[in-house]
Image (cartoon, rainbow, N blue to C red; front, side, top):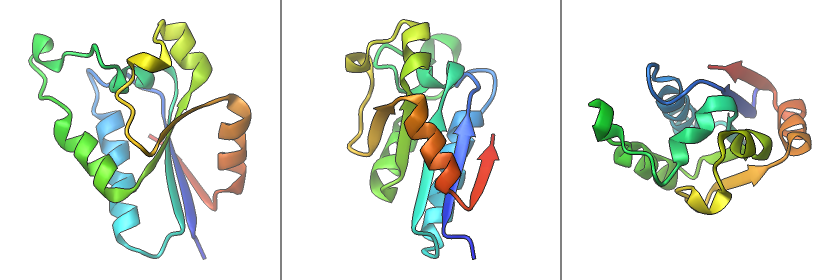
Length: 122
């Protein structure tokens, strides 16, 4: 029986909908109420998604407020890779941090993946 899922996303929030779709998929899985844990891990360019300075309107992309609300309401856990933030030049204080968002190192990510019954790379 599957009771924990991890969804890994490394793609930029622009040009693809990978980050948004990862969050939607995770929230949908949580809504099934059969899972104990669903985590989304943002690595690589995906870390830009939660940057406070991100302005989607400048490239004619809709704002992410509904997705942020979905994360908040669903209780979804989001892990952000600390090294990816560093490589992107983003300080953790510049993130739109919702209560269930944590900046973590690769060992915490490895632990989450190892403990999950199912892992998706979106």
